[in-house]
Image (cartoon, rainbow, N blue to C red; front, side):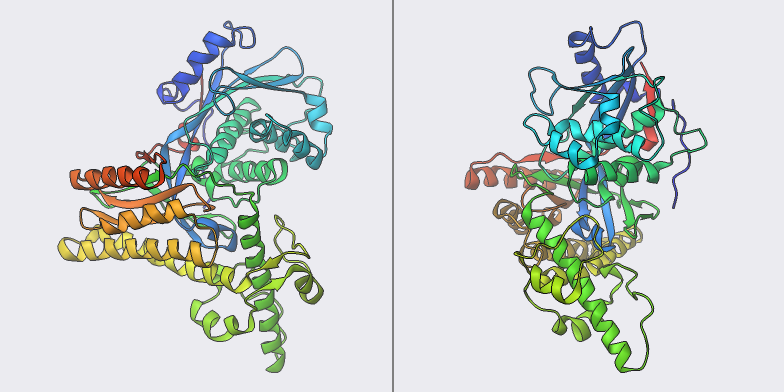
Length: 492
């Protein structure tokens, strides 16, 4: 589904939605020399997201169910008189003073992506890659000509309330808010190269893949852009078929508990698991070709259409799982099968990959997510015990997903395991299920719960017990807000 075109100035309320007011207050108080009071400032905002079900299965084509959060990133932009881009962060690097990154437009346009990526890896610069990377991608994709001498520089200030490193897509929120603002500034919503919501999300994903260097899928950017307040964004990631949103049943909510254990989507565990999944895909495809040849039928195309999510789980367990190695070195794989189809990862010859474990997670996770969405949707028409039973089914699928993250995807974390166990012990007060989210290896646990005082009390007990056992303070993230596409940009 393609998002319809938006207007550039749709939201009179945008300047009053946090963190826009806090951002503007600091711009006016601290950046008077860089932002001229006599000129208008364009503002934009994009929320973080809670990965309720799907997680890393986005890159293998699964359905995902994502929730736009109340916390968000805000961007203020004003044109300059020179050809410099100057970006100011109020809390992405240092909460107490604006942190600055500056680059000339010609230098930005002339660099190769790998050179830019190395520059942003220097201490104190990585935060700027998410913003400046969006401008680079607009130039690279020929939406904007940064070499044109009539193109003016920009002053950009950012502030976010999405916790960093918590698996809540603080990076996607920053990219989407930046890209939304830049696209409006360069009039990309109404010209002949008009950008729609999905294309905007694609451009943001490219900035993160190519300039930041993180091999993320697209679900985070799509949710931050197109998510609807109070509903789950449903998308089949092949590559991004957005389905009608899934409204939460009355009296039911999702919330996050941040373990305050930092996760890293570019970390080695995430990359190994992703790479192993694509290695497994190629091994299964070769097995399919062998079976076809034995039957006198040449396999002309991939029956999975490039996505493990299209492989029937029962066929996988019966026909293909036994033929897949539990572990395999990258060198042996490359010698036997060649490269994978994944553009975001490279098989390393000296690394051993847990191929069967990665396949078990991805193939079965796709079915778990489908069933979760079906049960949750059915709940709208149920009452009494039948309603509770369906919500319990949803919760049990979340627990199964969490267990698979730990044993098969190998992206678990002890602290997140503890939070999930504490939720499971308190199911009866209206807590139905929980799971680690996003890229795993720390971050936030998603919880499916009633809207009730008993559920609130249970969450409070969980947070207190977690701190008692770990010495870490867990933060509860509740509430929702609309995606950037629904609020647009505004002049102030």
